[in-house]
Length: 294
Image 1 (spheres, rainbow, N blue to C red):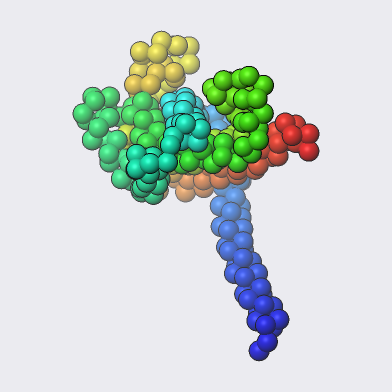
Image 2 (image 1 turned 90 degrees about the horizontal axis):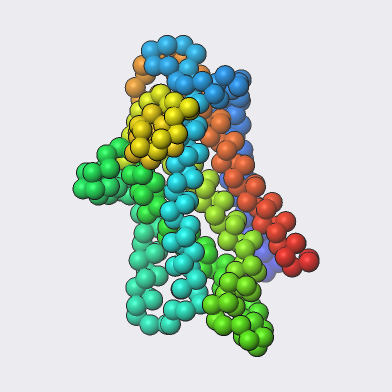
């Protein structure tokens, strides 16, 4: 067999493998959506869940997932942005930065259940926060920080060095060049990574079982006292998220219509993650066209 035939054969194998992967993914998504979409309604998205009763919803769990995502990004984004700027713009090539980058790589490969157990020992037990939103957010920060930092660093490194030289030539300081030239140029890539990280956090369950708790107490949306455990904005209350709720419904079996609730919640979770992914790419392309006039 000559080189051209080998090339066609290898190309065909690659296309076949890619097609199989796409078919498996499509079949999985279709299975979840076909089972779950008929169970989704406005009442299902807004009503609280009802243990031992029929007709429960996911309102509180959906709110907890969004609120926990907001608190996590509020903590992790400034830290990741500072770390990414330091590693890309200021850090010199030496053993210290090599250790930092190696540590980031190791942290990014840790299983989420290990991060959850670490969060349980440190934030829940040692710090005394108990099962709460702040414990879950801090654990997810450890889970999200390495990937977000690496994404921001890589986005900054894609900015051509001539952009930095142009800023310095105009009399800008190094920090002003980073803030006014480099960051705006890297913004599409940074935002894409942030939104993809949001989707990853939104669907996380293992780390939250040990930190945010497995119960969703009733919330009083007229109570905006952040120190009250019934307040929706309190960070010291337990918060069962959507992903944890799916796991709980399927393992405990105490809900009569648990299969329908689980299917509907899974479909909502899949739709949310897909929106995060497609939204990230659409926003990244739009910002790139706007900022580069492409």
